[in-house]
View (spheres, rainbow, N blue to C red):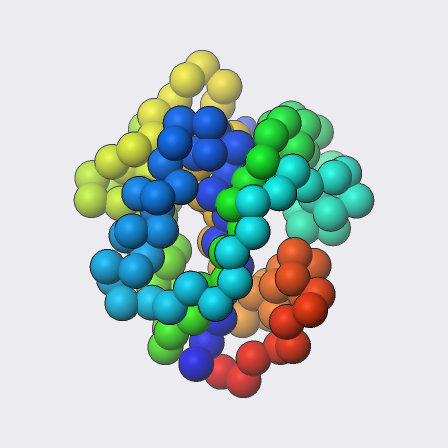
Length: 143
Ligand code: GTP
Ligand code: MG
């Protein structure tokens, strides 16, 4: 089955929403295959967000993502990548659809859209790369 990397970002952990996010993933029918609460260092975050290096929101994003623990989760199931992106909702929590994690639980706190509760891999290539970064002990899964 396909695997995706989900992060409950530091805002989600601080607000006590880890359980709520995991509940939605499990209620949807996906399986949790790895779970770790960890404060990421700049090396890991730089690698994770390499595609955004040079963008205006990159430095604040990396600073925010290292500001406290994140819950890193490997989620498994057929079409789990697309499925979790659908559960998460669009990037901007102000306009993310109600019913989604960002739409139901997120808002703009005056800090642009950086604080949007969750991350989910956006392709099979991203998922393999990100799972390798966060959980090097997990071998790449067949999809
Ligand atoms: P992720 O699942 O976290 O990757 O979100 P995404 O795929 O919806 O967004 P994207 O990969 O384009 O951007 C990664 C993260 O950077 C977002 O989740 C936001 O936290 C942040 N981000 C993206 N675009 C902006 C922006 O225009 N301004 C700010 N401040 N942050 C942004
Ligand atoms: Mg993304």
